Image (cartoon, rainbow, N blue to C red):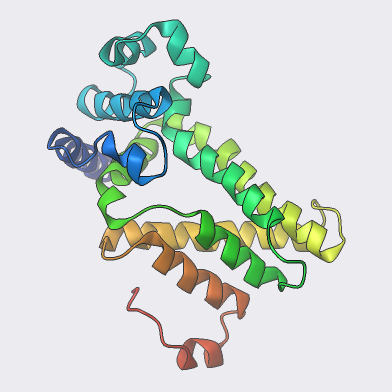
Length: 233
């Protein structure tokens, strides 16, 4: 990372910390996302993110997070395997929800239509969630240990899509077509997510739906020219 890039990341993390401190992220997010109020795992997640942005990831210990939450270190490890795992709590929950969504799809649904339906169905992020998610992604981009922790989580998400594609085509999930479906779907969703974080003008589902419809159509010029869609540039 260059000095300029490092300065940009530092500013971004500082801005995210200010947003968190101003109350842009609150425990009420747990209710918005369908979780019961007072869920300890969610409380630990919110507290950890605030401490990471205020003090720095390396400078914040598990003991600090537990103390701020009023619980023991042992309680922390009932919910999370490591300090880094706190930042992936929501993402890992989405992976499990995605698998369940695929299992509930009608058998006659076309492959990429099924992928689009399942991904959009399990998404729950709204424009109001952007400050928290920006803080999370800024931290992951700034801290090498967190960057290294990302791959297994993305791999797990991709694998769920590949498993569905394998079952749909009757091929092993580690064969070419299922792998290609899994990886291109992940890439399209990450692109949608990044643009949504920049614009914050609609629910993430709008961006995911547009990206996956285009992917399913093969990004053909005819499709892109003839299908009305929101301005997502």
